[in-house]
Image 1 (cartoon, rainbow, N blue to C red):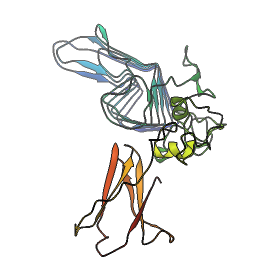
Image 2 (image 1 turned 60 degrees about the vertical axis):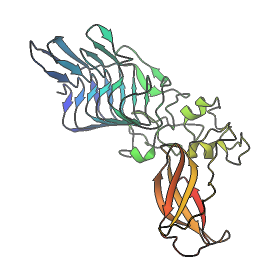
Image 3 (image 1 turned 180 degrees about the vertical axis):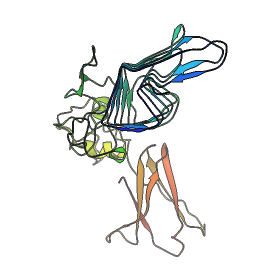
Image 4 (image 1 turned 90 degrees about the vertical axis):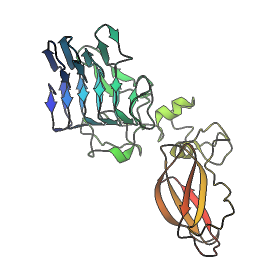
Length: 321
């Protein structure tokens, strides 16, 4: 398990050209993690590792060419492979703010999807195809646009138009610098992968801008394209479509209720976005946060204000922190 590293935490490392290979006859066995197994990898490149099962036996498999049951944070996992199993890039574990691309997995005679990930919980990652196993939010399939790839790995820094720029989540940051020792967060939001692009022109996720056909030079950031009074930057923060006037962050009319347990409050929402709920006693005074980080649901999110048990009046706002 873990030809390059096993059961440890890696920071700012290159895990390169390791292999795990075992021959088994007649009984179940597992060979896993050509690069790393278990533990975690942070701001790392996992490149050119292989796990292989030389002889097929009943129940025997080889999984996780790059990583097996590992927590990957801001990693670039490319050009790894599996022969005899699943997850050419990664199998199991989790991946946050990571690029897992250009890996391959062959289960004996058949190619398994694109071979990048199997059973990995992913958030804010660049991979292909869209993960069907595991769970997560804000993953995308765009080509990561490295400066170059090939040979001994090429140059895995991001090009100026890479969709991975500003496409991460700062909450998953591990450390203040990237693999080069440069600042990990530039332009307000961290990039996906081991390297941070140092001169972004827009403050918005490039993957988001490219999804809606918008320029990445910053010229659209402050534009209200759909007439909702939200500019493109605000639409991005709220997870909305900046070109659709029906895509809004709106409070819904509260139902009439005699519920003694509190007032139910609902709003239009997006899955994967967290919301703060605020309350005031009139529209001219400051509102106070009564609940933080309510996890948004697809379509509509509701919360019962259990402290609203007298005659009111109550006024509510919802905000994205």
